[in-house]
Length: 241
Image (cartoon, rainbow, N blue to C red; front, side):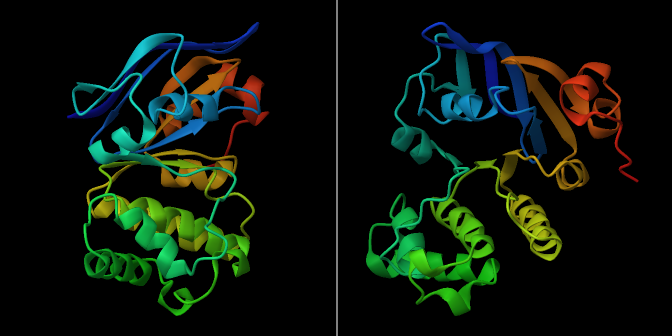
C-alpha cells in the first residue's frame, strides 16, 4: 500500500528551478533513500512533502489524502513528520522536555507526554541523558534527539534529513540499527544521506535527484550501476557486498 505519492512536483525560486516534475511513491514499511549531489533538490523535496514549501506545480498525497499546501503542523497531525539537517534542539530545555514537546502533538496531559517520551528515550538508549540540556549534547546525541522528538509525534512516515552526518563509524552503525528498529515498529522511513555506504546498506530502494529532476528510482543493486547517477554523484560503482 502506498503511504506517500508525489506527482510532478516542481518548485521554482525566482529564476532557479529547484525541482522539475519529480514523481515518486513510498510503500508502507519501506526504508527508502534519497540521494544526489549538493544542490540536487533533496531538502527542497522534503520541504515540499512536509509542508514547509508549497510546490509551484504538482500534488502530494499522504495515505490517499491530498496534502499539498497544508501547514506543517497539520501534516504532522496526519502522521508525516520530518527531521532537519541542521539540528534544532530547544537549547535550554532538558532532553526529556525536548521530547515531550513533540509528544503534545497527540497527548493532552503532561503525564501522558512524559510517559511516551520516556519510552522513546529508552528505545533510543537516551534515558541517562534525560536531565541534560539540549545545548549540552554532542552531535551524535543531538541526532538521536531529533529522531526522538519526531517519534514522539507518533508518525506513520518519518522523513530523516542527513541524520547520519557528522558521526563516527560506531555512532553511525548504532544509528543505522536504530533506524531499522524504528521501521520494525511499523514506521515507514524516507531518508536523505551523504554517507553513501550506510545509506545503501540500510535502504531497500533508492531515489536519486540531480539538478532538481529524478534520474533513477529502484532497488539498491540496480541504482548503484546507473551511469547517470555514477556520473552525477558517486564517481564510481560502489561495492555494497
